[in-house]
Image 1 (cartoon, rainbow, N blue to C red):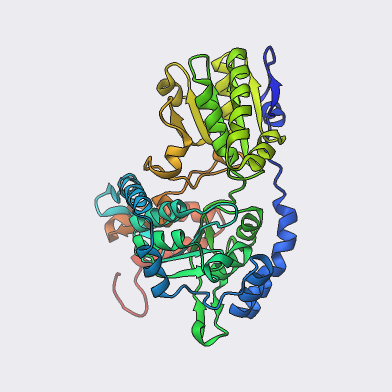
Image 2: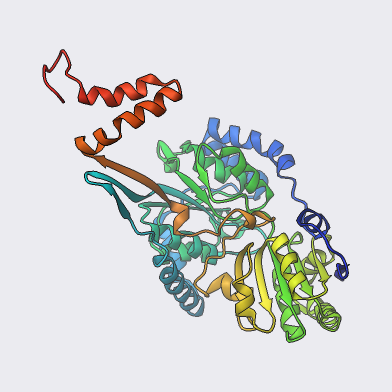
Length: 450
């Protein structure tokens, strides 16, 4: 069901490792060609385009693009008590972790009267995308909204695809999660058109829309399919984005101390997301590899979404990778840069401190990715496709900007004046130096020193 890649006895460069490891082929460039006209359509025609596109892609024409307050209240009232308790616990834990992420302001005194202060300013308005294709993601509402709230964002907008089964509104559990978090600006819009609406805003075309359906946001976050990723790429610069998140992935680095059934269960659980999901085991133990493959076969056949799971596990993006030892295994997982990395080895905590590239690291046999998906307190909106080499998962930092506040007295500037002039002249920008000297020269207008 799952391919093997044998790297034992081979010494590979980082580039060679990257080339040989399995990865989902996501052609964002190709998707962008299909997405560009959608974005243009939304910019030009607003709510009318959003309804046309919903009918085309979601099979329903929403009467209310903005979800009415009564629908949010009804969704929360009808929420299963056990699900509500689970979401409330997730909110509590995620909020505790993200509250600790708030960056502290600081001031550096460089000399008497020379001070640079750093402020962290939240963005004003954010758009949070919640997928609604093969699964339902109230947990993604939690991850996006709590991080933004803890950053101090004042306006939160959630958008999720309309559902035929819910009268053209997003899934009721998604709506209930919004209500739990106090988010009342929610839209029944999905896909690339949702990203376009968030980036450019949309005017109303029906009485229930108002003159303006949705105002533009400053930042768009949240996972989605390749078309959502392509739309984010096309609007980047108009708005900020978190990342071009692609298909989900798990890598497990395990030795012969790991429980084969645990590893198999975790690979299958990630494959459940999407036929393009990637599941990778890296191990120096052929006995574990054999046992995991056998358990994967059993679990994949027995699970509810067996066809989807089988397609993901049989795809070129999934593999069992054999290595000489854990040192080589660490090189492999660092080269891969997984969205989710599980370490099921002896002394896994020490190994975790040596990992250089991963969206999130799950340590030991009792920290499965499923824990992080819901209630670990960590954020599950994570970099995919190797972007963990340079990007972080979603957090408070995704919604704040660092701004330097510069305060200098006359004497403090005077101490640097000649040096500033010298550097400005060296750059052939003499007016820069003159702007400093002007503060210390007598002018015709004031007749005295500044």
